Amino acid sequence: MVERDDGDARTVTATTLERPQARALLELDSVSKRYESVSETIHAVEDVDMSVRERELVALLGPSGSGKTTLLLLIAGLLRADGGSVRFEGRDLASFTKSEALAYRRTKLGFVFQDFNLSAGLSAQENVCVPLLLRGVPHGEAHGRARASLAQVGLERRLTHTPDRLSGGEKQRVAIARALVGEPKLILADEATGSLDTETGDAVLELLAALPREHGAAVVLVTHDIRATRHADRVLQMRDGRLSELQ
Image (cartoon, rainbow, N blue to C red):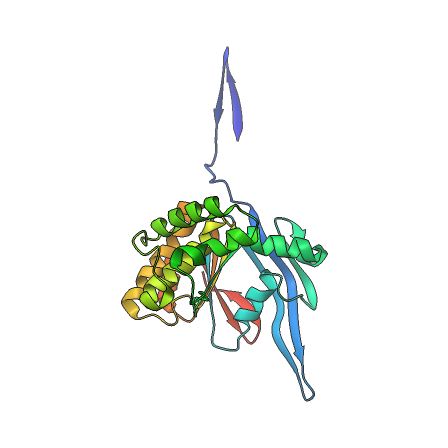
């Protein structure tokens, strides 16, 4: 930035116009995770550096057994790294107490999985209510927020339907509504389109891709589906526990 004083009036000119960089929400530094067996040591995650900025969609590709799901569990604080650090909003997850780790997962994260993880005996609205009720949100408020979240994913007419009355795509939309209802800062999606046909999978990918823009949540999308890359701000690849960036 250059300032120039032209007589009585001061003008400010910029030599370059720079777009402000969103701050890092999640940071992994030299993270490793090993599993020990009698005969061998499996290096599931090996010396991984990774960051996710606010409102960013990061696609994470890789074959089965490459360490993708282990990496998500480390980010969620469900596994502890053997080396390195996982920081969320600047704080190392290893420093969390049990209650802080639980609050982190309930208030900062949303989860979307391939198998939907819906309770069979609950309606769509009740399934979406669950994370709010676990946080102590009053029943009436939780149901109102669940209705609004389901409307955002186009299921306002499926509130009372149990999972057995929903299609695969509708079940995944319920799962996305449940992930969104707590207004998380980061959504972790593990093979969210893996059990869906191509057309339905494309619709779910478009819905996930809209979350940073429309809801302000960053998304880490673990997938085998190369179609996800067209929606991503960055594409990472995992192979044999190691991470590299494709774009």
